[in-house]
Length: 353
Image 1: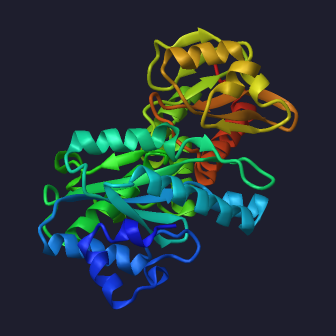
Image 2: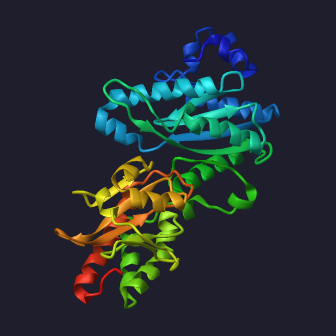
Image 3: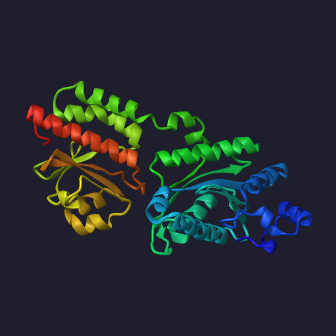
């Protein structure tokens, strides 16, 4: 929880504390961070005073899972712990506030250039705040987050423009798979519209995939026909698969051909496996791990292709140098595609490889 002494370092809060000596009116009751209203007013005040700062929003990934699995007391405990560590990282250089729910705002007065911001968030993501297990009462969840960040006055001249940029970069980070930070770069992000990034409805996406899959003959043609849509919806550059011959292949790159006899060991009795680390892959499927590691894969989603107890192979969705969190909707799309492949194998009699 922020103290009076910490807040009085900043003229905006020093003035507020002259009016009301009790510091609690400036703070969020649960986390002890600056309240939503005052962190937003603080950012607006800095702009009015022409004081440079970087402005970011942190959205914790899959936080609903913690509440649903361990209870809201665990969720509240996690928020308090994350807030404390974020405030410690900003001590002396800025302040953090709670925007609402599992979203937090960061005002950093020290790091106002791209490289400096990158270094700051690299520390955040290397275990100082995120990408680590938090020991809570009765559980120890691994917590990640997505950040969108922009800089005043380099990127925007007004508060509304600045907030729009952090909103836009945050959505970009979510669309890339979460568990990452996005710093605004005009050349990359100026033309991105949030409505273009926003996911289509499930019916629209699935019906589009069915049409593209069914409109061409031959299994490889079918897979290639759905790749543009998968690249757009899942933000991937390649889709891998393993058939009955136990060879890892890629849909787009025909040069990929690598023996992996143990891919099915990941699935065991399940139809789907996903993880944001490769520890389990290394333990259960060392051949597959070797193939993924060679391609700089850090996270993976594997789906069984088959009907009932009969297995035809598996789909492997993995993106190099991307520590993404696999969302339920993304896993569902891959599962649906795997079932379409399995059904077509039985109808046409054409194997996956």
